[in-house]
Length: 337
Image 1 (tube, rainbow, N blue to C red):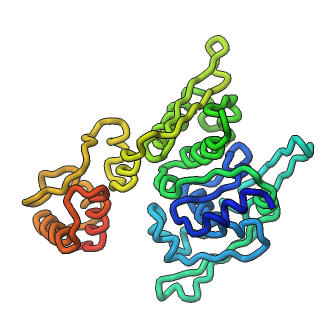
Image 2 (tube, rainbow, N blue to C red):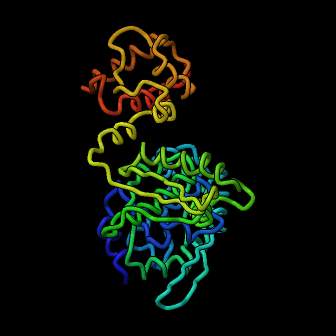
Image 3 (cartoon, rainbow, N blue to C red):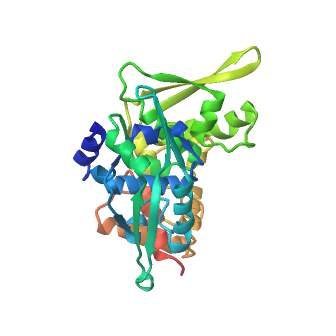
């Protein structure tokens, strides 16, 4: 058994981290890369399997547990079915230069969604990993320990694939950068043929936004430098370092997603959030945006008073780290007037 499974078993009860075999984490090995929601589902499945990911057994998870994950709260049978289709279509290619063997296989053998109790609001999802994935996991001695909260907050498949690839390299001694040909980078990011053909498009729509999002939401700081021959970009050097102070990242992960893009590009105020001490929120754009994004139509004065009472009853201060998230959840729970 490879060391990756040992690490996964040791961290089986750590709900903040996912242990991913490096062979899977390095997205250059994955063709027909799944979309964002399917990738998040894949990470949840691998985290759920933990140290048993290489076993030829059935793995199970309840829909209620899937819905606890940020960004996956609205899933049901209809939305999960095509995601498993995407995962079944993903192709894993592993080249072992020592054995001089290339293995081509897949991630998912079979998945089932048991909806016999759907009327009561829950489903049971079960799956079997394919032999290729199981053998990769069993033989793997390199892994990525991913901050699960970061993965589930990232907003594009490009960001997830780049993040998991770089995270698999951060524990290699004396390695702080890697050079990718443009074609390798396209493969790593799962860019389909015929899309983002020009480097300027690949850079502006995939590389730059992904790095900005990873820098905002992860423990890593990435930088990309194009390398040219003449006027043509032939490769890109991606360098990384681990943040010395993760407090800003933790604050952003705890904050509402509303306004995150604006905070990332500097077009909004990034000072710590403090809920108003008195009055309503009609003239407080930050709080009004959060309320409206949840679909809550309770009076602005009432929702503010009720939320302050909610905080007081629980001894929570108005500038607590996750105050925006608390207000978002409160508005969603209160719902319509």
